[in-house]
Image 1 (cartoon, rainbow, N blue to C red):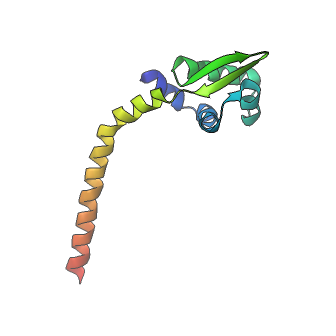
Image 2 (cartoon, rainbow, N blue to C red):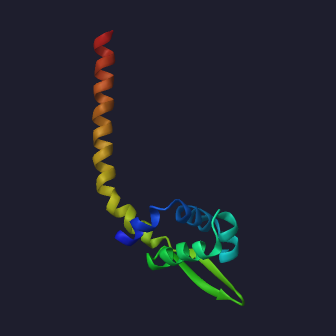
Image 3 (tube, rainbow, N blue to C red):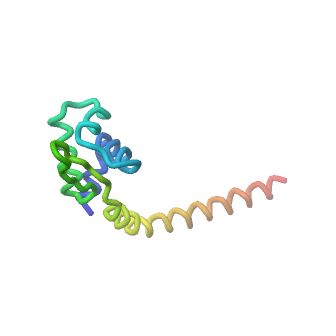
Length: 105
C-alpha cells in the first residue's frame, strides 16, 4: 500500500493514471501529455509498474500501458473506514446546523 500511496503522491503519475483510465496508451503518447523529458516519464512509469498500478505489454516497437485497477480497489477498501468516519461526522455537523437554524426561528 505504501508504494501505491507514494505513486499517487506525484501529479505527473496521477495524470498518467487519468489517461490510462480512459484507454491504453503507448509510452510515447503518455510522454506527449506530460511537460517533462522522456527519461522522466520512463521513471514515472517504472514507479507505477512497481506499485502495481499499470501493466505494460510490448507491441512491435511500442510499449503499451494499461491501468490495473486492483491496487486502487485495495486502497479504496482501506480508505473505507476513514470515509465512514467522515460521513458520520458530516452527518452530525448537518444535524447541528439544522438544529441551529430551528433555534434561530
